[in-house]
View 1 (cartoon, rainbow, N blue to C red):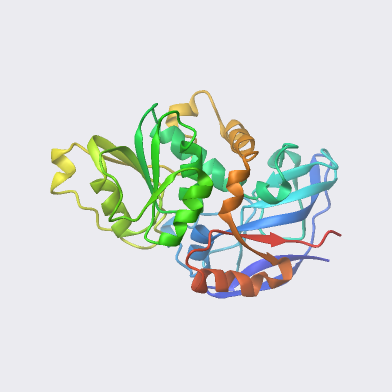
View 2 (cartoon, rainbow, N blue to C red; view 1 turned 45 degrees about the vertical axis):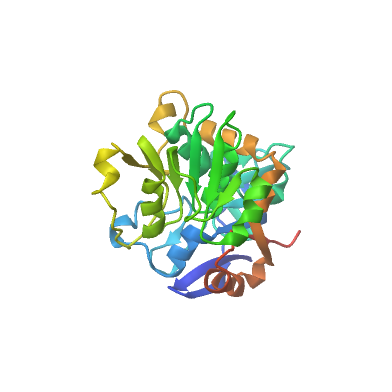
Length: 321
């Protein structure tokens, strides 16, 4: 009998037995090697903070149950195909935390040989970063700030570090994130010390103060690309003062839709392929800040959310058999 991680109710999680469907000819049976916990999104689900109006939009592809719970939720899973097409291949799938699962072969993506399986759990997060960079459309030599050094913000910063002659600063209230910025090859600043005059700012702190500071850092006619997901929280935005005089722009970006800047030429498979290609870069290893065994997840996830504010990705390790 397989096992799966469930949120029984907000703040209460457990491991339950999971029954596998009989695979069809176009299905694959995947044995999970690693899954990942994204502190931002999964903490929102953990505390029951998904607003009713967004229950449908927030559903993970293979979610079971409903918000706020009981619900089986997750979307960062890497495993090896044991049966069906692609047998023997390591694959990424938007599947929750579960020891084995059956899905259509079209729903898994082979992991390139030069990307370690343990790093490939970041695929979904780096895919979000790719979409944000497509939305931001950076230019050579741009001055850029990324406000919020969580998983998404850090991924965006690393992708933007590859823009020629760009000056990228990662901005966070936690000064210990300076080491993360160094590992990602970008500058670090606290909000008070961040340099202004930015051509664009990517905001990923999910805080009102972070969004305000992002607007303040812009040059005339600059743009804030808003990546934060606030759930059921209302946020005040300062649209007076310099917002109009500087002709600033605030625009949303989210992974559920391919950026219109690429939508006519690239779709979801192409975006996912770009993310996996980027993950050949070992710098992304800095995003994994803790590990646990699958059996430990009901204890490790609440601890990560409540006691480890600097945590990024929790990597969950599964038995080899």
